[in-house]
Length: 100
Image (cartoon, rainbow, N blue to C red; front, side, top):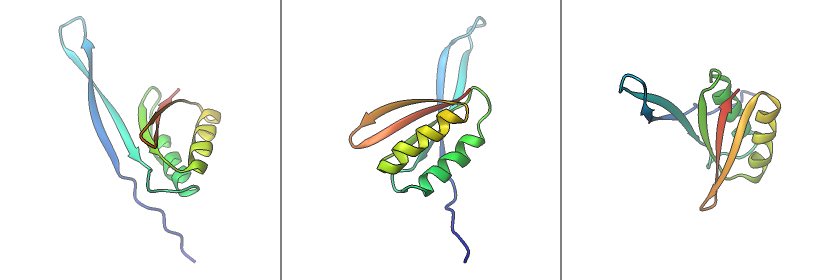
């Protein structure tokens, strides 16, 4: 039996930081992954895949609603060298993940 893993649909948002010494604004990419339609373990697998592609210091925002995913994703990421910050908004948990 062949298993199906959905394709990642990452959205990239550009955030502009303060001006540097030369008066230039620094642009920073922040990826996001909407996992609100996914249940664990698929949500965890997709989060692992997306976070593994990050380089040190890069961030990704994960949108999660499944109770199992809310428990498992932060636990996995914290054990594997990521900083995870939580925010709750209208039934969705937003996980701000940074690779350390």
